[in-house]
Amino acid sequence: MGRRQKVRSMKTLFKLQENGHEINDRALVSLYPISRRFVLKRASLWLLPVPLLAVLYLLFKSQPSFAALNAESGGLIARIVLYSAAGVAILGMLKVLYEELHRICYYYGIDSGNFVVRKGVILRQRGSFPLSRITDIYLARTYSDLLFNLCNLHISTPTRESSQFAHISGLSRKSAFELQNYLFSLLEAKESEFKVRPVQRLHPHPLKVEPDTFTPQYDRRVEHRAMANG
Image 1 (cartoon, helix red, strand yellow):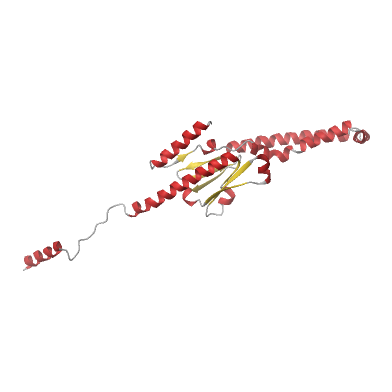
Image 2: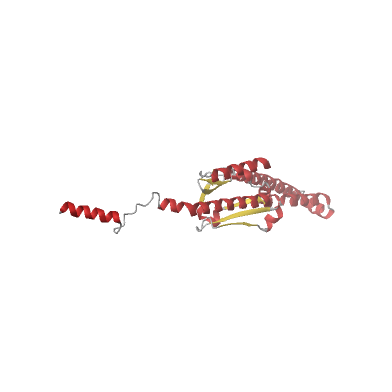
């Protein structure tokens, strides 16, 4: 999605918000997608042994000392290394495929005033966090995230489960900052809306004030009743 389409979508969301309609945005995952570098990060430990085993195989084939050791075993060592490299490569490609499916199935967005997160390939998980309950939104990085230039967005709520579930991993640094600013703008809009609505809810109708017992109108009614009884 281009920059103009992002700006147009943001303007549409804020227009809905300004008109007082319920915000129902299912495009956050499209506006701020998880980077494909996150797939490489998750599968890197599975793919790392492949080049190491390939180098070891070449040593047994080219270096005299390793070649002599391989010859004594009848070429068994070189075959074991080769088959191990092929097996690890297959497992690594399956891991890459799984992580790509995980990235595709990852969803996050705003639905009826709630921040919704859905993730998982086989065992699907879903979390819904009201915007009014969000206390903080912060970014965090690990050393592996720094290596792949990734950021993780965390959302804090009073519930304990939010620290384990309400986070989005694998965002690019730019997308993470933009998503954080966008969510902060929604929280500010919700706070301003909350400051106005309680008065309207507590007093949906104008209060009926009883006439003062010492007003002239009340005195005349009492006087007419006394004359009628007399």
